[in-house]
Image 1 (cartoon, rainbow, N blue to C red):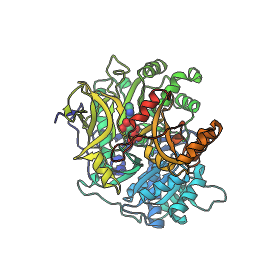
Image 2: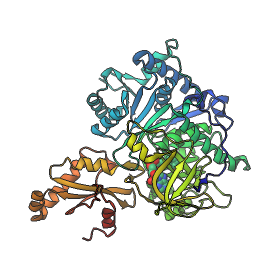
Image 3: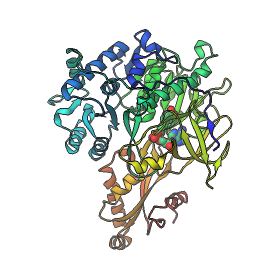
Length: 569
Ligand code: 4UV
């Protein structure tokens, strides 16, 4: 089978007998991590307060929290700890303390509704919940419904009148007692099977599933990305290196998503960078932070890049410190790429393509005379990754041939938790069937042309059509439904529903435009009452039927074609 390999191989050694925090803080790897040991650099800066936290403090906090989690709740091998909150300087402490005990981290979107959080807690089998004060009400209600014991809830910060223990108290408790836990040591190879985190993805079809990501995958991804940039930096003078110790990254992408988790958090630290941690995205605040902290690396999603091009406030800030802007998680147009290069005049403009099931797949390899790479490309396949092209006729293609992108890398996940059927569909013989259609040119640049899986991407977030369809079918008036992504300039896509009403309802509303509009509003509300905002429907169209194949599978292309026609009828 023709296979296209990422440039810059062969890969250096990837340790397979350590956990993520052991790799970052306890080991000396030839490619990086030196800065984490040799001095006490600032790891994190709290964007809101300017508070700086250095490596020594983080290590102490991780130890204290791990000790307390063990003493209080006997957290150990395989136990799942859920974080429900935005990025914060304590967020990584919870992750690494969990890992030090052999536990597993799962992070939920802080904007989730009770139902959505209950689903994540139950699917991941979390038994401990850390809640940020901003999402206390939803967090507590979901914990009760999902069966998390009230004495296994901790808060990021104290809330007046609330009795739950805080991270600060736990850390103190753990630090004032002798070490009680024994940190599990992995056998050679065990890093590949030991799950570190459960992040959610709907894969090619169906509802969101917990992706089992092992320690080795995250470690491998950091090494792959570092090897790829080191190759280029080797010949560069110090002031032109892409990643240098002392650089400052913007930590605005959520740590509960693979992009923020591997790139902003772990990879940046591995490079010896500091991270400015932003809990709430606000565009003007972001501009202020770039200027205030002289941020050198931006890791963004397309709507943020669109704002950089179009927002009137941009001209009021000095963004000259930025030397690398990376955008990923959804497509960004060539026009926007061109425009943002005018805004960030000192910066390389990069695109990356990734997936929860693999992590980072491609990145931009800067070339001396070209700041933006090849227009329209999602970056070059990184060292260690390999790609095969499955063409529509079922045969395998080579360079420049379009087809389904089938990808492997040392960073691939193990599969979906408790879901062998979905795992078998996406993970085949060590290869991931990405559900993306595209091609790769001789420079190993990937071009994504279309998505053949069911997924909708709103501002980089996953929306599973099956989740919304299942919820819409609970509405008393709806007989059948098909949800697809409608193109949107800012968000990339927005969910749109084609709805088949029960006969009696259809007869009733077809006589009265007012009744029809009222029902449409009611359906929109049915979603907005139960789902977080980025899943809200942009519109509802009533149709007589949604086409299905003989086995009852929705033929979504009809809906997409209909949207393209502009719903003319
Ligand atoms: O599972 P997920 O939500 O994962 C992501 C991950 C994005 C990353 C991760 C690490 C990086 O270094 C980086 O640059 C980006 O989004 O959704 C996976 C699907 O999102 C679409 C594509 O359909 C994936 O299967 N997607 C992700 N990146 C791009 C993209 C892109 N650059 N262009 C087009 N589609």
